[in-house]
Length: 273
Image (tube, rainbow, N blue to C red; front, side, top):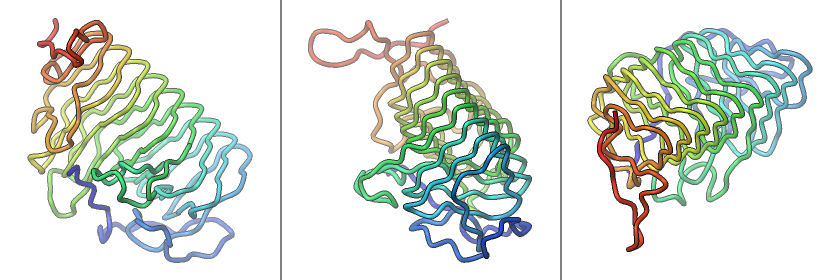
């Protein structure tokens, strides 16, 4: 089963939010933020910044008509059946946590478990998600029209705290790039990416980490310097469908669109130059 233990009890000092709503405990089924937070919802014109812990309540909506920024150390829990639309970019600062979107595969198989109970959200980012040394991100069943770019971050190679970084069931209009993150578990599963996918120098404590499987990639798939090396793990995933080249560690679990053969299945290919 793909692991998704949550960032609960992480000892991080976060500033209080700046919204008019009162601070409350996060009532979401699977809270992501390490302490009590503030409910955020409604429409926000222009840019919107989160400076503490916040959550989007299930059944509500949040619309940002500009950029959504998570300040250093902030947390946004939209890992819930809510509707989130950002018409600009999402900018994730150092040590911040972003949980966006939810789907039946969010917590791993069997796909009937998890906070969405067989349902998927339809969260949309018209721009890109750009993360600079995030603690982690949970991206599930999202539509990101631009790129997802994440450089560095994480708590370090550790089981305590147990910190995951999953990107699942999402549609990405540009590139997906994750480089230099260090934590417990990372995975990219069942995504559709119109550009390239690059996973480099991700180092994780869990030997089942760095699962990259069942993705459809219109560009190239490049993986290098990851420890453990890219694998299927126990995800139950299938080879990635890649229209471009498969380079480095990702070459072993790739098929190309023209490599479906008579007999009803895909034929894996070797690493491509």
